[in-house]
Every structure is written in C-alpha cells, then in structure tokens.
Length: 161
Image (cartoon, rainbow, N blue to C red; front, side, top):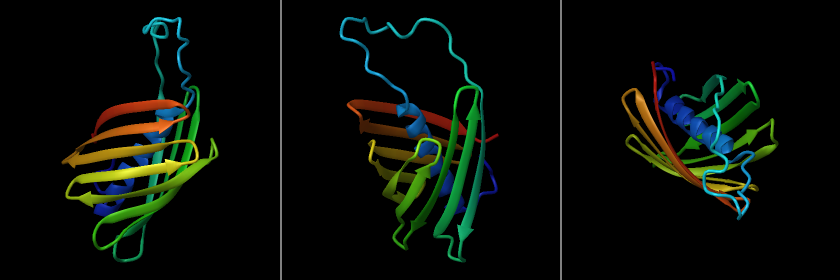
C-alpha cells in the first residue's frame, strides 16, 4: 500500500484489494464429496508467492472519480483487474470492474462513512457484501460472498510498510 495515496485513491485501493481477494477466494473452489471428512483437503503444505502492481488515476479536480488497475502474478495464476469508481457528494460509491484474465466483471455500490467502506459487489458469477475499515496504516477487509452454490466468508488484515 502506498502512504501517499490521496483519499479517493485510498478508497479505490481498498475497493480493488477487496475485489481481488474476493475473486481469488472464490476461484477454483469445489465442494467436498459428502463421504469425505471435514479435513480431507487439509493434508500437506501450501505456499504461493504473489507479485502485484497497482495503479490509480484520479479523474478531475474533485477527487470523486478514479480509474484503477491491479495486476498480480503468482506461481500458479495471473490476475488483471481494471475498474472505474466514483463517489458522490454524500459518499455513495458506485462503479464497474473487470477481471480480464477470467472474463468476469460487474458492479460495486455502497457508501463510505469515515474510515469504513460498506460495499456490495455483483457479477454474473457471485454477489458479495464487504466491509473495509482503515485505521492509520492498517486496514481490515471482511466479505461474505455467495455464488455457484458456495458461500465464502473471509477476513483479512493488511498494513503498509
């Protein structure tokens, strides 16, 4: 995370991070067979290196609109998200996003109150409700996603170095 992001850029960064986490969290998940125990898929070790580059381009002088991009590469996948978001004078957020590698896109709506972002994300594949809270150099993201017969709930804490 960049400390020098303007307020609307930080909003876009948080929205982008949340969408990326949501998409990565729902991709490739298969329900376990009914005869397997609850720990059947837990044996072994897992590691994954990830490299990401985010870009933010505020639009206009009011800092209420932004274009964003997030490209990530790991040992096993690529991720390329772009989006356009805007906040009105009442801090209601709306926008569109596309993840180009998987051909998924949709809308984001919600609001910002202080350091808390309450967002609803929709695509053809899933819907999700997210809460993003910023405090200084830390942020926490929690989401509840539904789609493809699955429910994914996650919570992530991030901090800038």
